[in-house]
Length: 299
Image 1 (cartoon, one colour):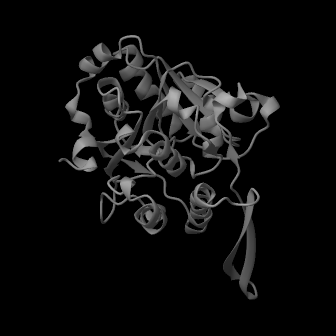
Image 2: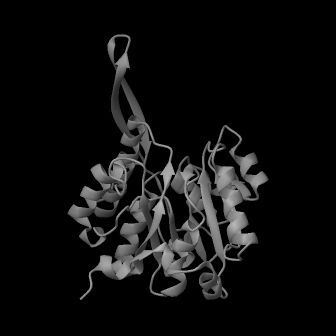
Image 3: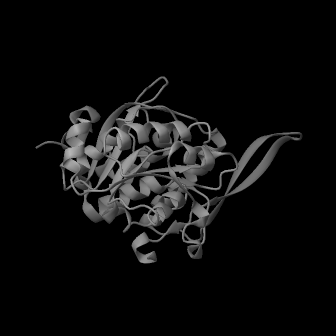
């Protein structure tokens, strides 16, 4: 019997753009780019995707950028490149607003129309437009698949590593608590696709734990064989500061703990230590671990 990895791992090259457009039929596809202060990269992402996947081939029906409190020209650049741009805080304002990537993705459910949603990070500097067709391949050709993760070779020593947070936090958590997900090459990859009918039933952490939470909850609700992964080739992006990665790791740990035993409160104070005039400066940063309820409940 084939393992999960053998059954559910694909390569983007398995499908041609023409075959995917034909398989799309009555489906509607939304490409969603959550962005915060990414004016340097978001315009090229939007323009290239629009030209290749909307104007040259009718695979994507809309490109939506959700701007998460940017202080630079992200919104203007994205709009000029051809995206529909929404400020996260202005979407369903009666629901309130929180900072974070997951919040932007959750809010996207209220302004997009697609039954298939593809998410892409806004800080990509090394990528190609085949990312989107590759992620859609399993959804359009395998009706049992509901969530698709991308993986790719990254610039650096190891190439296929998932990054520091993945290797030091997410992969050990998966090994200990969710071994059914151990075959995922890069579980925290920002490039993934999902059926709206699934995503709108999931609780969504407002920060960086959105990917790990979606995988755990899909595993629990639909089983491992509702998840697939696709080799997207090569990808490059901006790297986070180590101290910021500590906050991201806290959000991941909180999301897993919430699903296993419950976590009281929505803020976790994290103590960090930096060089200062007196030798060591102690800094306390509150990490937001709030989760949004399933979007279907907020309609």
